Length: 189
Image 1 (cartoon, rainbow, N blue to C red):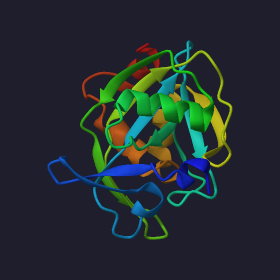
Image 2 (image 1 turned 180 degrees about the horizontal axis):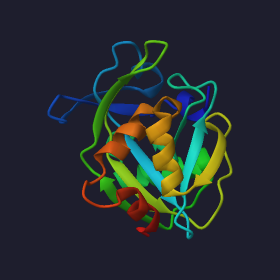
Image 3 (image 1 turned 180 degrees about the vertical axis):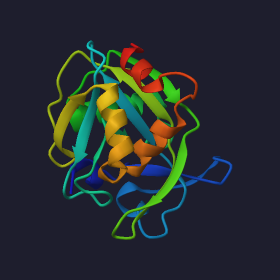
């Protein structure tokens, strides 16, 4: 169990279908086979070379253990500014200082069930960040990290979507059509 799991203030915001807050629940208890809709976020991190950071989820994660995903995800606490939450998780999970942060998919939402039957059900705004440093992994959160080009990520999602988190694959599908969205993500900042 991580330090964040033991924090009594570590609550997630429960949401109605229209994304209105309707309550809170302890983050450590919210993910089950009947996970209620709740607020989260997802963050893609790019470096000065236009590469994207992928991380492999820790093997002790409740959902999708050992799966490769975007840089990091998390849950804002009740009343917490979303940007503050993104910076907090970047530091906690990856030891990263983010130099730039902007919304990428502000209305992203998904529901997915992992092999154990645990459900992720989130309104999950997606952020794009930039850093000039390499990650220093919190092993309770991520066991590996790799910088990849947008083309490498695109190819992986096309030929082996099962090797990536479902939210990452869905996010890639939702990036604006009609342009080379992944390439622009890598060059956006």
